[in-house]
Image (tube, rainbow, N blue to C red; front, side, top):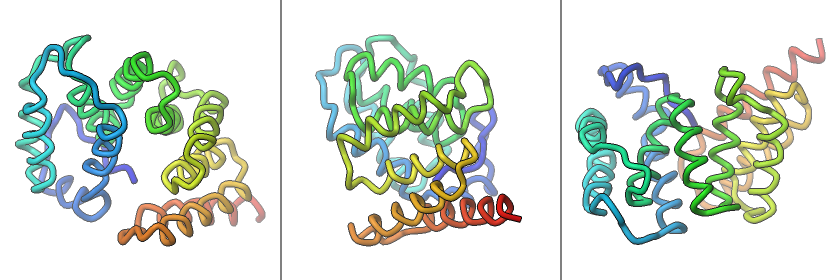
Length: 210
């Protein structure tokens, strides 16, 4: 589900193509769902800012969207939709330090939100910084999120990633397959994200049993 790392907001043609291949709809889907669940009045930044940037991403204008987002000064009490957008972009571009910081801020506003906990768990798994990477906490967050949304394939997929990172390969593979099956049953058209998790978990499982 995650695209390649983008350093200092440089958006090369190769990376842009990678996004099209791997995550063309991920950015839009991730924060669009969160926005629907977490609407709150804008306090410092117009909602139109986030809407216009989302529109650029939807059109595939990644560079323009990132540049537009970077031009808007970040504020502690900015509109929720704008913070969600910053967090989603940070997560999708492997800027895990900022993703962690922003999702923690959002969880302070919306304690226990399943989507936010899921993304925070994913951030903990993907990060290499020991101040962020915490597989026990990621497991708790993913489980708590799943308790709220037990039919969400994305959360099952995150849980598979957590178990894979913990070295529990058999369980990770089972959950990855379940996540893909749930996504297919839900009518998700592009299953490549789930297929990739199944592939990686399967390879790790094969290596573990040798």
